[in-house]
Image (cartoon, rainbow, N blue to C red):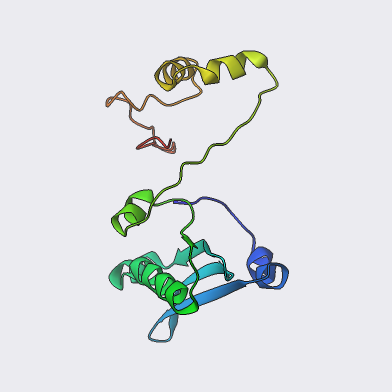
Length: 156
């Protein structure tokens, strides 16, 4: 799952520009298998990015290991809040995370779309689906064509 794309310069300069930014590196034998970009401050630790070689990461459970390592770091440094970041909510819930709802508020240039988007979600989804702006995830017969993205769930 990709939540964003950053160039190499971002990862090279982030520790210089963001106070508290640091990397945790995970090696399998002498091969770099994963890294975790964190912002660590006394009031909170923010898990910004976890990147791994999928094959090695799965084999050695590096995602779970990184989670445990981050919690251990928070306990040792007496950091009261660990913000685990976006994505992989199902896995994070399994590991004991508590989710705080968030909302993105925006306004379209065309007021009719604002009205449309504030209707109850079921009605809005149906209308946007019929207009071709939203996939019909309620229809099990809807299959993504080769080269298209299949959406397997909705985020609230």
